[in-house]
Image 1 (cartoon, one colour):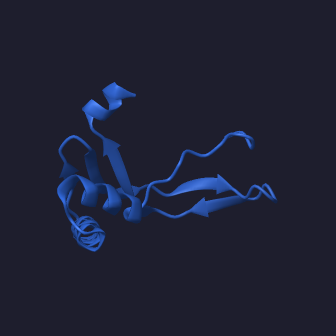
Image 2 (tube, one colour):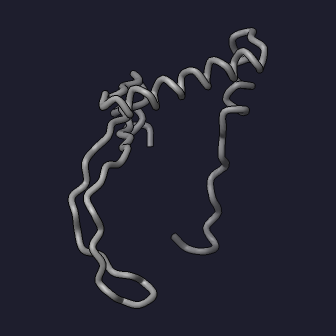
Image 3 (cartoon, helix red, strand yellow):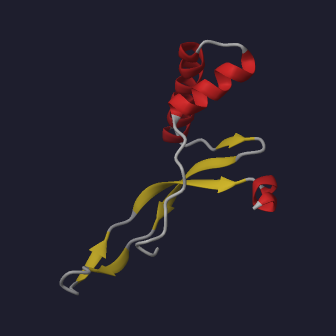
Length: 99
């Protein structure tokens, strides 16, 4: 990524809560509570090894990574990167089609 490229605007839980509150006649506090509960449930499901699919948005899942060799960018020394796990989000086809 070029250093002069601007980052896209970030939308977090408070902004999403305000939008949700306006659209559904909720208080911002209630909307934030709903979003926090949704986030917590997604995280606990992922940590339990489940896939979480949100229709029209995409799927969250945990994938195993293989051990591999890498390079320290400062020294150029080869290093072993251990196997691990990572969370992956795959966007839905409808979102991909809109891009």
